[in-house]
Every structure is written in C-alpha cells, then in structure tokens.
Image (tube, rainbow, N blue to C red; front, side, top):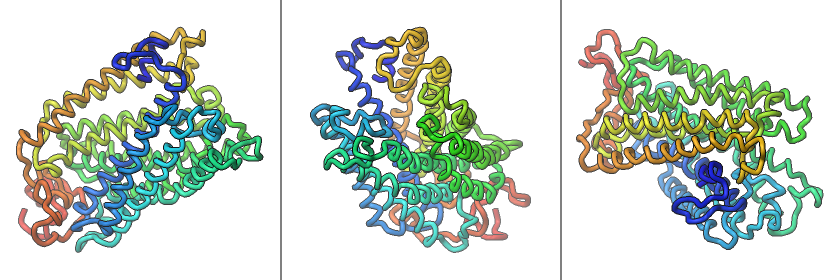
Length: 517
C-alpha cells in the first residue's frame, strides 16, 4: 500500500477500495517500521533462533530459566496484540514515524491520535520487557549449562553472536525505556520533557532513541551473521577462518556501537565539532565488520562448495550486506549526509543492511535447520526458485531507491507528485512498486515449501548436512530434553572439516580423540 501510493498518488489502492490520505500513509509507514524491526526481526533472529539452538549447540536439556523464558514468550504475545489493537482505535494507529520523534509524538493535538500512539508506546515497553527476560536466558544458559568439554572458545559462533546481541540489548535499552515513560507523561499528564514551550528539548528523545537504536541494528545483525558463518563453513567444507579474531571483532564492534548514535543527527543543529568524532567512529565501526566479511570470504576461498539452498541464501545475504555496508559509509560522513539525510538513499541503505540479515540470513537459517526442527527436508528446487526470485526482486526494488535519493526524493512524503522536481521520478517509483509486488509474490513458493515439506518432505537423518556442531547429534526433531540418552561430551572446536587422517570430510565435536571415523 505504501509503494502503490508512491507510484500512483491519490488513486484507488487495489483490495483497499479507496486512496489513502497523508495521515493514513504516515500511520502505515510507522507501523511497517515498528512491526518489521521490533516484532519480526528481533523475535525471529534473537528469540526464536536463540531458544531453539543454544541448548542444542551447547549440550543442555533446556534454557537456564524455563519459566522466565515462557514468561518472555507470553509477554511478547501480549505486546503484539496491543500493537495490533492500535489499528482499531478511533483515529487509527500511531502516525509519528517508527522513531516517534517529538514534538509530533509528544502532543495529542499534533498527531490527531488519542490512543494509537499510547498503545504503540505500551507495546514497545512490553516487547522490551520480554527481551530483557529472554536476554538473561541467552547469557546465563551458555555460561552455566555447557556440556563437558565445551569451553567458551569451543562454542559455535552463532551462540557467541546471540550472547553479544543480548549484551548490547541489555546495556542500551534502559535510556529508551526511560524516554518512553517521559513521552507518555508528556502526552497524558502535561509534563514537558520533550516540549520546547514547556522548557523541554525535542532532541533529547532523538539521543535516547538512537543510543538504543544503533546497537539495536547489531542486535539484529549479529545472530544472522552467526547463522551465515555456520552455513558457509558447513557448505564450504572448511574450518571458519579466524574464529577467535571474529569474536574479538564483535566485542570491538559492540563497544563502538555505543559511540556512533549521533550520526542520525548530523543535520539536527549538532555542533560540527561534535559531528566529526561521531563521523569517525561511524567509519571505524566498519573495520571489525569488514574483518568478519573477509573471514566469510576466506572460508569459502578454496573450499569444496556445496550449493544448497541455505548456502545460496547465506552467500546472497553476504553480498547484499556488503552492498548495504558500503552505502552506509556515505551516510556516516557528516558533510555528505547533509545532502542525502532523510532521502530515499537512506531508505535504500537501511533496507539493504536489514533485508540481507533479517530475510536472506533468516531464510538461510530456516532452510538449514528445518530438518532438525521438523525431521523433514525442504524441496531444493523450490528453495532455489525462492532464493533467485527474492534476490533479483530485492535488487530491483532497492538499488533504484539510491537513485531516487540522489535525485532528491525525501522519505515519509505521501504524495511526491506535488513536488515538481520529484514528478520526474514517478516512472522509477512505478518500476519499484511493480518489483515490490513481485518480491511479495515470490514468497509463495517458500510458504508452500515450508508447510508442505512437513508432510511430504523427505525424512531427514540426524545429520543431513554432514555438519560438525552438537545439534546434529540429536534425533530430528529432537525429543523432550534434546537427547534421549546421555548428553555427549565435546572433544574439539567446531568446524573441523577435511582433517588429515580422517576418512570423512567432517569431524564432529562429540567424536572422542582417536576414535575411528
């Protein structure tokens, strides 16, 4: 609906029956960003993968605090219902942008929304509470419940990445929760934390939001990168390149992620003497991630590559992430950002980094661990159709958006045809809209493949990919308690492939030293 409005402004939207107005457009943009970042990306890449994989990969029967874990699930469910309920209140859902900037969000008369934005704030508060509970589990479980022989530097990288994401979330979310309380008070009790006419500072919210918001990007990114590394190592039949260095790079990136937030505010009146240090830290943070990318490339170099569907999605996600990271360097330069800030160049960059992780990385993980989850194999032919369709349509949607941004088209404008210089860009908007519809439709093969394979897919063995990590020693799907007998001990690091003297290509972590292959 957003894309239709941008391509064909003020025309009737198919299946909706009428055009949408500016307030509705703002509401759709707000809810799209909120749902995708907080209610799709985080539950999929952190909560779901963490709950399923951490006990299996470290040799544990369950998470450390199962009741707290279940509570986090149900609080997330309540948060989702509260957010969806805001669609049905009078005047509609939140329409202040997914970042909720005051003064637009701080005054009810500015938004025209009495309850929608309050429900939005409440839903986010509940969701953050859910992830605080989950984050405790994702840290305590790998630290305390590892099986015999599983030292910290024998943990699979995806476990390290989920732990890193949990630490970043736990350390960054506090200021935003405080800001959300202040915003509720401004809206309902007449305070002026963010209202200039009462002595408040609207920019304070931006600092609180982005102090959390930039580490949040890595909360989403790290688990997906971990999944890609598991998959690339398995299907390259090679040990991951620079295992310990990757862990140290993540630690460095985590520290730097708290020192870059103001690059979102280069044109907010920030003193240039303060903008430049944030520009430097923003460009510096690309160094540890560049190392992680080169580690993945080095792992594939010279490997015996097995091009399964998970491998296609992992390599495709890696390529798009490289593209999104390079465009991010432009945004990190304070002088350049003056011209491209809040244009569709930023939209294209943001989606390139998040789509590569949330969707391409998320699909890679789903295809890879599907046999372990359901005991069946997904269809490879339809998996590859899904990959190529998704990859190509993604490029057709978001690469042209960079040109829209350089051409001066601003984001969050409901009717670009009202601006003469943007009118010339309408044909490109039409092209992007058609490609976006194609991107949506090409997800149908995945849905049918995912659901159908549960019933008619080929039965999966314990280790259909000949992988080395501990989750592949359990039955598929794992029984209650994960292992029917004793939990296997660990005798070596993960990712032992093509080991001299071993007849098979892989050497499982659980195989004792000197045992016959």
